[in-house]
Length: 125
Image 1 (tube, rainbow, N blue to C red):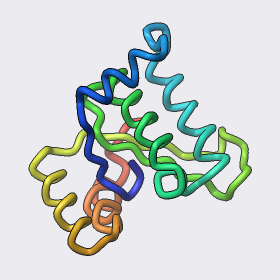
Image 2 (spheres, one colour):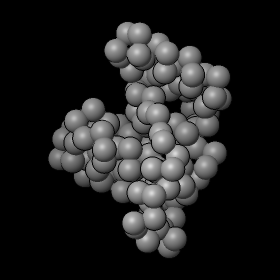
Image 3 (cartoon, helix red, strand yellow):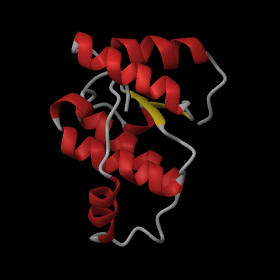
Image 4 (cartoon, rainbow, N blue to C red):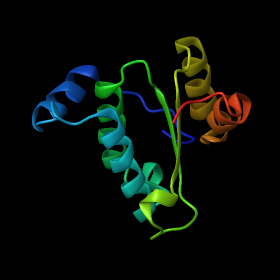
């Protein structure tokens, strides 16, 4: 999510999602939820990692091929419609490399550079 690679315990993720009735929720609605959360806190993935993981789990539950999501808010407290959204599918080999770099350097800048900057305008949203 954004510039960090998150690891998930699939069993825990599924159990967490089962506590919510998400059957009726659509992928676009999940993206709007993400926009609302990032409008409140543009650094959600760093300041509230549990909430960011839940959002990532919802994204994966609704669109399993999507494993990269970027929410860019211009400033805290902005209108959720002003939060830009990009998403993509990153190969697992690339995710493993990014996770290793992230753990080595304690920074998510690698994910930002390798995924979002290289993809340019080829992502959906």
